[in-house]
Amino acid sequence: MLDRPTPVLSIASMKEKVTPAEWQARIDLAACYRLLALYGMADMGANHVSVRCPGEDTFLINPYGMMYEEITASSLIKIDHTGRIVDKTDFGGFDFGVNRAGFVIHSAVHQAKHDLACVIHTHTWPGMAVSSLEIGLLPLTQTAMRFAKIAYHDYAGVVLDLEMQAQLVADLGDCNAMILYNHGLLTVGHTIPEAFNAMHRLELSCKAQLAAMACNTPLRHAKPEVVEATYNNYQPKTRRPYGVQEWPALLRQLDRVDPSYAT
Image (tube, helix red, strand yellow):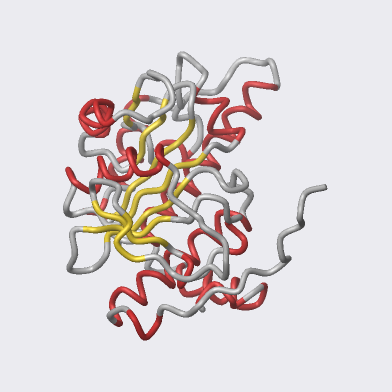
C-alpha cells in the first residue's frame, strides 16, 4: 500500500532569502496559479506559468508535482536558461523538480523576449478543442476580436527538445497570444496581470466559439472592417495596460478564498 502524503505541505518561507522585488513577483505568480485553478484553467500539476526574476537572467516556475491550488510564493522554483535550478525552497522532505516541457517552452520566450515578464501555457478543454480545428479561433464575438491576429504553432510532439524553441519563438512573433495546434493555449505579458488577462479572455473566446459551433446553425460573422476596428480598439496604444484595474480585485478574491498563496 502506498504511503499517503501529508494533506498540507510544510514549506519554508523564502521571504527573507530574496529581494523585495523578487518576493513581490513570487506573490503575484503564486496568485496567478491560484487564479488559474479558481477559474477552471488548471491541469492538475501539469502546465506552467513563469515570470522573469527582476534584475536577473532567471525565471520562476512551478514545482512539478504540486497542484495549482497549493502553490505559494515560497514554493516556486528559480531556474536559469539551461534548466539548472538556482534556488529551491525546502519542501519538508518532498523533492519536486521542474517539468521539462515547461522549461523548454518558457525559457524559449524569456530568452528571446526580454521585454516580456510572464508566460502562461494551458491545456484546458476549450483551448485544446479549438487547437484541433483547422480554422483555429474565429472572431465571432467582441472578446474573440481582440485575438483577430493571433499566432499559431504547428504540433511537432511533446516540447522536450531545445531545437523546438526557435520555431516556437518565430511563430509567436509580436503577438501576445498563440494557439499551439493539437496542444493548447499560450499567452505572454509585460506583467503577470497582463498575461492572465489575455489567457482569461482567450479561454472565454474559445468557449464561446465552441458553444456557437455546437448549435449546428449558420454562424453570424461581423464585417471584416468591424473586426479590424475592434481589434485595434483592444491594442495597447488605445487603452490602459491590461490587468491594472482588475488585478487588485482578483487578489482580494483570492484572499477571501485562501490567502496562503502569499506565504
